[in-house]
Length: 440
Image (cartoon, rainbow, N blue to C red; front, side):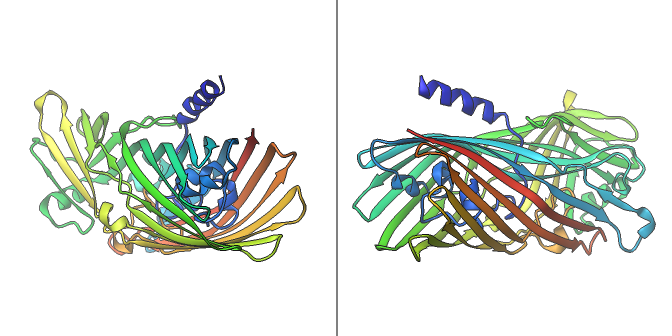
């Protein structure tokens, strides 16, 4: 009966809004315990979020016990775009400023083996500029994006010795993309002739002379599903090693995903006639990631954790490739937006202080580089946030029940694309996560 209830909760959680860009397209932390400590999570018990952070940490549970966590997070990005050289154009403020993400997980330890199942939002990014900003060029068409990837995770951890735990998971991933992107006819022509510095395009369609075009593949205000969808699998591995009575070292390897092409129906709009068809985003993958961390129990009350993580964006974000097939055999169009993302180094450090038997206080920082080159920065995909400052707490009502909360502030980052002249700013001032845990 308990497993049926858990499965039902995961099914509801699966219809969730995507998470949005913090470490590139990743979250800065998973679960409020880790997020309250700057995202550091590789070498200590941080609850069922460990299945996405480092599955080996699930083995810190006592044999014969189970744990169920249910959580929700809120991300509140503040994104705006403008053209400094043309102040009269005004500022386009993104209306996408509130996104909510449920998560749930169940784990049990029997002897040396820990197993479970959970659902987590992996990450994503998005903006909503509406119909009337300067980005629409007077066309009255939307400019918006919404990308989200989630995981259903099946973890296992095994106590090899009293000091060494190994773990891993097989993850089912699903996700989607809404895309409404307007471009001028001259810009599209430049892409087709090879004269554009931001992308390229080719077509077999007999297009008339058009003043503008719009890729229109979106479910609009629906926050639960996207128009273009994908699914696939990934593998994660991890370990923890108790190097000394007060020092634990942990490491993780998250393999590159194997996702199908994102695909869905929509239209290629223009000022002459809309062209219905099917769009594919070709070979979009989540990157390989590896990391190493430690947890040091400085005193009975104070624990310090520090992690380093390398996210290999360069392997998966070289180009953003789209393949459009018009209905009725009217032809095809291939379009590529150059990305050339850099690999990202993320440094996380945090501490937890046991103020009392019931209350634990947490704080941390998460420091990273911006992976997107200025010359390829696209106002629809502003994954530019670099640093995060975090606070959190945990409170135990009893040995069975507890809550955890985290708050994150990410200072604004401004990037101006020298090719388009568009300046995009992105900050996050009120991100939070809340979790209820029950042990039995």
